[in-house]
Every structure is written in C-alpha cells, then in structure tokens.
Image (tube, rainbow over all chains, first blue to last red; front, side, top):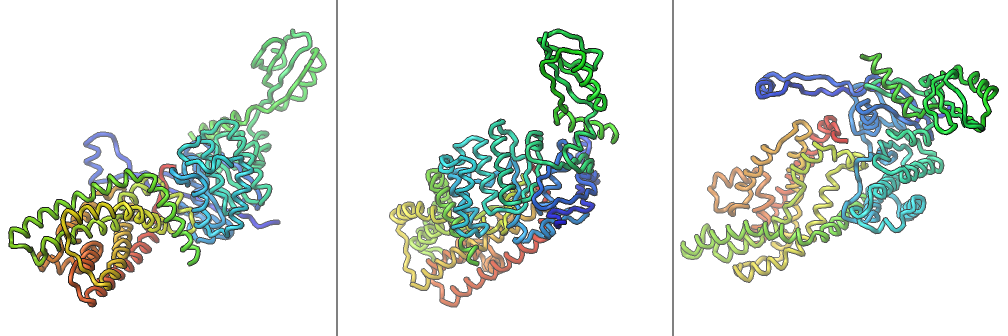
Length: 329
Length: 267
C-alpha cells in the first residue's frame, strides 16, 4: 500500500467578511459598529490521494474547490485541519516543498507579456535551479509534445489564448513537479486546444507518475483524465470515488437510441420519448428497467441500430448539485 | 547562493530586455523626472547668485552638480512601490509569486536592478545636456567616486526594504495609500530631494540623521559632490547597511505574520 501523496484531514477554511446594508446611513453606522459574517468556504473535508492518481475535483462556483487547492499548495493558511502534501505541511511554504509542486490557474499568468516564452522558460530555470542540460532536455521535450516550436520565439502578447495556455503549462512543469494542482487549465479554450492540453497532462502523468488534482467545469477534461472524482459543494465533501460509481449513484435514467429499419414505429409505451426524427427515436428509461426495455425493443421492432448511453456527465453533476442544494435548503 | 546569483543575473537580463522594448516610454518618464530637479536648480541658482554667488556653502556650480547627480540618484531610487505591493496583494497577483521557492522580494530587487542599467544608459545624454547648460563644479576624489558607486546601490536597497515594509501592511488593511502619501511627503523633506539637507535647519538635520530617508538621497549625492571626510563617507555607508538590515528584519517579521492573512483574492 503506497503512502498517500496528499492527505487531508478535517480541513476547513473560514473567512470573516464585513457586511452592511446599502446606503449612507448603514455605511456611517458600520464605521462605529462593524458586523461580520463567517463564510465557511471549506468545512471539515478529508481525503487521501495516492501517488500517480489523477483526481477530478468537482463542484459549482463557490463550492470551495479553488480554496482547497490553494491550501494544498501553501497559498492559504487553513483555519483548521492538517493537510499533508509529499510529507510537507503546505502552509509552511518550505522551498523544498514548493520545488516539487506546481499550481496552474487558467486565469493567471507566469509569463512575461512582452518577451518570447523562451525568456520566461529561462527565468523559470533560474528560479528552480534546474541544471541546464536537464532544463534544455525537458523544455525541448515539452515544446515537441505541444507542437509549439515556432510559437516560443514570439512575444506572449502576440499569441492566442490557447497558445498562451500551452506556454503556461510548459513553464509550470519545467521543474518536473511531483504534484500538479490544475485549476481550470482549459478555461476559455476551444475544444481542439482543450484536447491538446488534456493529452499533454495525461502524457506527463504517464511519463513521470506525477499526482494530479484537477478542477474543471469542462466535463470532457474530467472524463478523459480522471478515474476518480471528489465532489464538493458549499465547502462540504459530497462524494469521493470512481467516476463510474458517481454515474451509477446519481444517474437514475439511461438513454436508448433506436434507428428502425423501416423508419416507422411507436415507442411511447416503452418509456419517455425525448426525440423522434426520421426513423430515429431517443428514449429515457429508468436505469433498472433498461435491460428489460432493450430486450423488448429488439424483440418487437425491426431495429437497424440501437445504443444505450448514460446521460451526459454534465447533466449528472448538475443533478448532484441541485439535489444537494435542495437538501441543504 | 549560486542559485540566487543565477536568478538575479537572469532576472536582470529579462528586465533589460523588457525595458528596452519600452525605451521611448522610459525616455519620456525620465524627461518627466528631470523637470523636478531642473526647477529646484534654477530657483536655488538664482538665490545663490542674488546672495553673492553661494547659498549655504553651495555655489551655483555646486548646486548644478548636486541636482545633476540628483537625477541619477533619483533613477537609482526607483523601486517596487508600496502601491505595487497593494495592487498585487489586493488583486491576488501575489499568488503566482508565492508558488516560487524563493521570496518575492528577490524578484523585485533583481528586476528593478536590471531596469537601472537601461535607465542609466538613457540618463547619460540627458546628464550631458544638463552639464552643458548649467556647468556643474565637480571634483571628486577616487574614494568619493567609489563610495558614491556603493552608496547608490545601498540607497536602492534601503528604499526597496522601506517600501516593502510599507507595502506589506496591505496584508492587514485593504488600502494604505494615505499612509504611503504621508511617508512620501516626509521623504520629500527629510531626504534631500527637495533641498540639500545642509540647507535645512539644524534640528531637522538631526531628526533626519536617525531616519532612513536621507541615506537614500542626500548621502549618495553629497558623497560625490560634497567635501565629506572619509569618516563621514564610511559612516554613511554604515548607516545604509544598518537600514538595509533593519529593513530585512522588518520584511521578515511582517511577512511571517502577514502572509497568513493573504486571502489570494481574484482567482
């Protein structure tokens, strides 16, 4: 049994936020008597992540995902709880710890805006004290993997958002970190660029055995990279397990797509018809009835093609959050 | 230590590359900076001429030397401001720097040090023009030149530490601009920027001696243009070193407690 790379026990982060009503009167009153609200951004969460795991960290906006990542990377001091990453207490921010991790935030840049990426890579080399031969080997390997040979000589301000993100990924991984905290690394990118970044992260994990904790609102990222997901909502942990287990638990329905050989038929008695178009029918069937309904359709209809699918993961995740919101409310 | 040397050299190189891209902007900025001492120089030269050729021991040529050297010292005094700290803390930009395995102040010190090389190159022709117009009297000894060279970098470090301490207060309060303005006003009067310290009342000079400001401005200028003895010159360097050490201790203490409060807003 390997030692976990990330171990979080009862981790919490609370913020004290000043509040007041609108208007001059309330503003004046707040000068003398301030009122505060305590916002529980993260509330007593616990989990472990083993070496080499790629884990999706899911939750709606404001769920506490980024706050957790910041605590694990040493940016924020926890209110309580003891995170442990690579055997270090992140909030102590020891150089030895920081030299083994990286945090990529899709909306933050480490690059010099006015210079070609090659110069920023060079600066990163000096920050992490990477020996030159190792640096050049790693840099060239990443440049080749991400196909950016021509781009690295252009000033960052002259390249597109997606291209810049590739550079951000390179600069963040030059020191070959053992733990990657990726916070929305594909935000704002087109699907091709998203796929490219995903493939690179996958390849990095395969080659180095690094541990990855990823947040993303793009479920394609999570589906492609993460076997395991941790779902957080209102600062509390809702689910920790395999992605497939999440789908089983929260997906009450499956979708059956049928294409008929003769193009005609009636399907309303099998279940809810979601769509009907030129001999193709889409049905929504309760999960437990799917095998039975599928068998009946095949026996009773002249079927040309039949597919059984889980609903889109986005729908399931949305359902998880909405169910929990209702429960909380 | 070797890693830090490598980082400083690389960061300075990056700063030079970046700032050369903005040479026109840097030049206009410098021209703006030159206007201030030129006004002081014209005013004090006029007063000196009206008082029979000198004021407070400074001849018109001595004043010209003071304010032309002033322009170089002013460039050396440009550091990462408290406003910069305020901005990077308020908007969460400190986050990316906190992820590095070294204190962000190294990045500030090295970057602005690199920038100085660009500014000094741009400063030389302006200084030459000012010298042609105002005809400074400047006869420094080799010791004065050596002390001046060390003192301008000492001044840079004193001011960097002082303003880092001020800027880090933003970790506790959201806006500290008003405090910055107060300090800037004190600095203007007590540093020798507005007028050579020797022209100030004795009690002001005594107070200024125990504050950091004059060691960032008056001391380096006077080291080159004044008639200071070796004892005075080395005492000045000692005062600079003391203030640098005080600044480092101050930054370390404030950082230790303040960074716990960083909420990494905005991302």
